[in-house]
Length: 615
Image 1: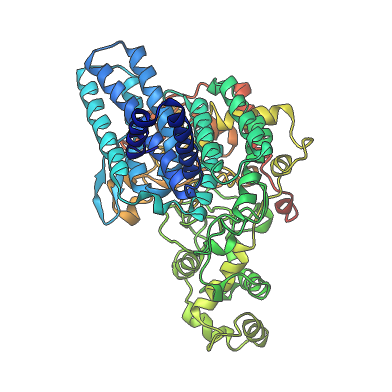
Image 2: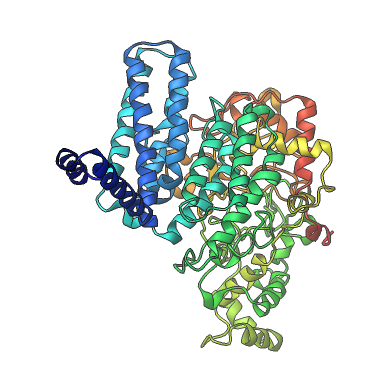
């Protein structure tokens, strides 16, 4: 009820008496109720968002006042936890509608390079900086820094509140996508400790995020079934809050996956469908571990060069044909052997002259389509660009696509295949169609039928007790899931799945633990020239990992046991060889031998039946 109506009510009381005033007041109350009921979805979402932001600001104010009052460390930690819980509710919409601000408020406490100025970087800011302050040794200087970070977050949040006509951005289709992404973030990042690496407060924060998703969803859909799913999931999180003991697998299969199916179904309703551009995730399936979860066309070129049966057939023939190389002996399959999960089984690749070994290990091609960066140093954005670089590299194939065009044009079988695959091209055989055809074949190498996938799709007979424990450790105490993201288990960052991450982990040059030295390959730095990227390498997939030894960019480790021992000790930091910019947490994981065996047992469940058919 507005102020004007309230004044009129008071005036009537004085004029006509209490009974008539009550009747009139009742009319005004119901008028106000129906007015609120008529609020648009945009306005209702906007009101919820405003409340969430105000709540976060209130808790930030309490935290700052607690610092000023010089309260004890435990009280500061509790005040900080309250900030985190309130922010996690607001973040459902902040992450989607204000992505740049979201990075300032809540991203890993690591510096980020400035894209156009490789020598510059953005220092870490936000809640994860505050977490490191409040959950380590606190002093006068760190508390001063904490107040600066609080002021920065307050400034950003207040900008949201002052934004004019804010409600207009909250359109149905955008809210649908925002809710789906928020749930995926809970399933893949929040639940793994990605946002709370020190305090390990991830489980309560995940519950807060689900509460917000549920509240926002209720603006559009209110059903007994969806209410029950959310209430059960939130209750499970609230009653199982110990991070290292949390049953990730049960939460995912019994609670998160049904919620995912609910939101996917909603996103397909006519009022929620967005027609703007391609997206990494398909909304046409309801299981997060479906073979159709990802949209292959998103990771490829334009529609004219999308994967077709004809292009795959042509690309496969070219893949195994040595005519692209200078020696006419080496083909793509010489180094990417199907029977070895499209690797070569060597520590590092052998040069085309067969006389020396190159500096890097040959990666698998399975699921390589689901990346937005190619090569260990991420220097190529498309498979076509990668193919071009490999063919023209004098140490790998030493070939020429221009020369290959001439040769292929004289071979009738290839002319027929190119005509079928590229009927719309004026020149059917050209440098790009060669690269595109081979890339189409590589894009067809999709692996999503491991025993773990089958378990996640409902066949509970597919995992042993040890393998289940291994998954929970992988996503929890072992922290593997904070870099190898579900469901691809590579570095493609959820929930957007548009950026392939690299990490600095301090890989040694040799497997000599008594005399370790850092591998001299500077990785991504050679391409970007950003000091933050020195010794950074793309996070590879762990799917089919048991078939792709040896491991690391330089093939330094022969077994998964050796890899796990490296991580358990804190990576390069544990070997006393870590570069200053190591992004891997340098703390020891303190995994027991039994726990390491369980993690490895889980990783072996990522071996795909389709891949094994090539052996």
